[in-house]
Image (tube, rainbow, N blue to C red; front, side, top):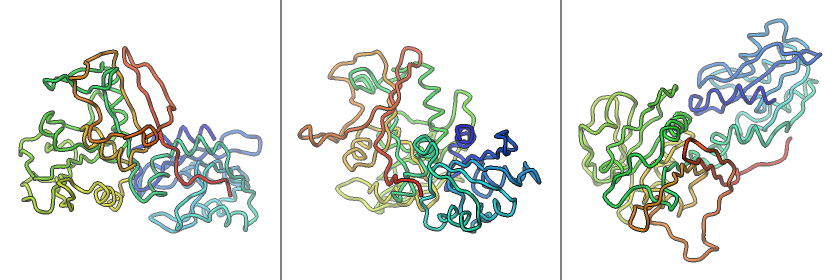
Length: 358
């Protein structure tokens, strides 16, 4: 199963609106016959890819899969049926499929006489597929807030200088994190002050995510770096704002406003409807504060530098404040890694909707 998980995560950031899935076929002695993983929407599912690689040798094997084989007809046929046609004798999977249309593959296999084992390495498999699982269980994209800051929680000096608080190893890692998400999101303040590009650099491979810019008044400059041709960009404006003229390949989305701010709940619903299952929030402090206040942060990835700027520096989080300790947003610290002189902290909320195997 761990090998199937390794295969699955190689496609992170490329499979939406589908999950990442890996599959290993084993012969009766436990030797690997074939492997497969889902490479993206429209491509064969992991089971189908492994079965195609195995050919006639698939008969009598055990299929080890990170997600319950599907039972529905989508762009490709039901994986449960493909396993039955190939003569697979046993299926072991980690996580039940939570989508109503696709679930039921385990039952179909059992009804046909195939031995089915559920829940193997479920916790690890849930974590490997956390972006997709959270998204389909909540009906909105999984939200990761990424920031680089000082030891005392500052993202920039009082004069706005911030390059570079963190070192090159942290910045390269942040681009790998960006590549694993479907969209990267910044607010208008970051757009004006930093003119970010939001593409992939440092030699990081992968498909650049959709660049999403919240620009309520529609004041984005036509020469903004985010409007180049490195990746598509979605400029989100208020419904009362004039639609900015954008170069080809980019799009304007008008959303309702409340108290002078765009409705981020509507934004997430729109992105989910477009098949995006994960969003990386990169700035700024007030936008991150709004997500925190509304309980919309699923994971925080913090790159902390051994630097002190003091109380006059710009805070990494703004517009959110707990009046008492019981109102604080609490996260679980799951990962700590040193990157050069910096430290990466990964903190999460519990995954929603987890249940026992079925």
